[in-house]
Image (cartoon, rainbow, N blue to C red):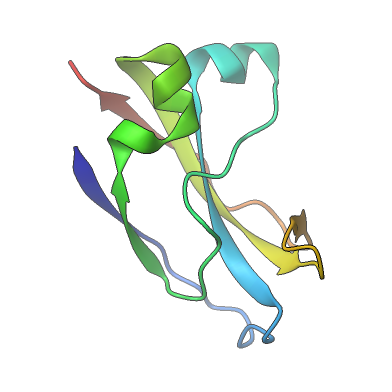
Length: 97
């Protein structure tokens, strides 16, 4: 259930209060146009090992088609991420089949 997601960042170095937010969402969420939820805590690394069992989209929808991308966020004083950059390219994968 563990998978490593990697991405390439060609932009300027991130500020101390900025991070990458890995988002994973189901095909059902894609069709409805609902919010793309974070899969892990935002990170300044360009890769993340994710235990898919605990990703909210998988908990809600189970096996099937999914998408992932990364977006740059700014971490507020309350710890919440606010999107400040363009969304990365959407990638498709299949979980649990």
